[in-house]
Amino acid sequence: MQKGDYLTTILRSAKTVFTSRDIAILWQDPGSSATRVRISYYVKKGDLIRLRKGLYVKNKDYNKLELATRIFTPSYRKISIDDQVYSFKTIKNNVLTNSLGIENINETSIASKERAFLDTLYVNNNYYFDNLRSLDWEKVFQILPIYSNHRMVKKIKQLHKSL
Image (cartoon, rainbow, N blue to C red; front, side, top):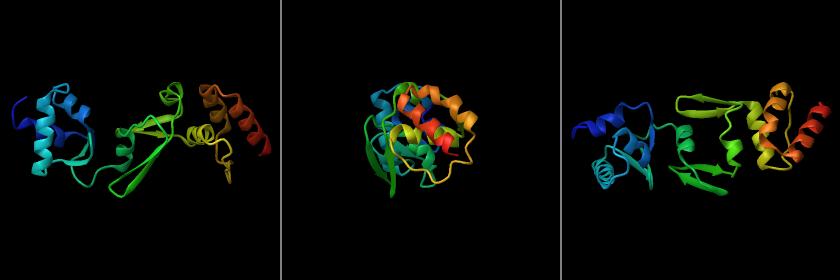
């Protein structure tokens, strides 16, 4: 890649949020010190904005949902970036990586309402829902086995029966 192409590659990307690793992959330069130096140069020059260590955006009009998918913390934590609070909960890898009930739109994974409902019950034992009539219960029961959780099965059957 030629000298002037590095920034152009980032600016032409459909992504609005980048990790250091994303940039290294775009530049076909897996994590060398030259990548870190170039990134630092573009931040100092104002061509990239550093939100926090390892997270960069092209400009202030970045996609906040995309940012949320770029952040990963392996523990229960809240992170505040650019006056926006992102809250994370730990989910088993086999559940997190299962795409059942997940749709990928513009670099962002979005859960269906059925998957979001099940994920909420998974991380919050006694969560109260006002109205569950809009759920497609066939989809709920189709997604439920990925959690391998007897407590959830019992709770879902109880909630479905109460409708």
